[in-house]
Length: 52
Image 1 (cartoon, rainbow, N blue to C red):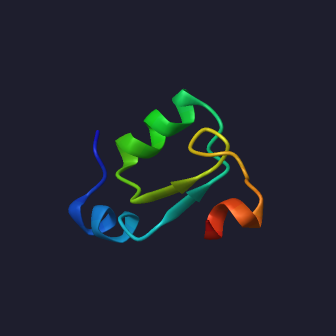
Image 2 (image 1 turned 45 degrees about the horizontal axis):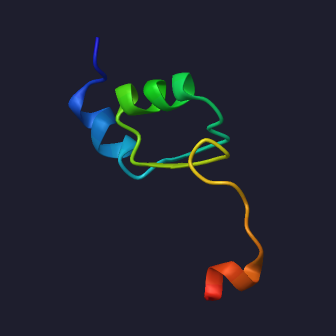
């Protein structure tokens, strides 16, 4: 069952942290969370790579 519309509006501004597996990503997608970060999305990189 999907979350109610009022909750969906709030979830678009949420950041889900620590996403490390496809299963976790699927849950976040199902919930409608707008932003994710974690090793599944991208691994850390040196500062030099970010500003290059």
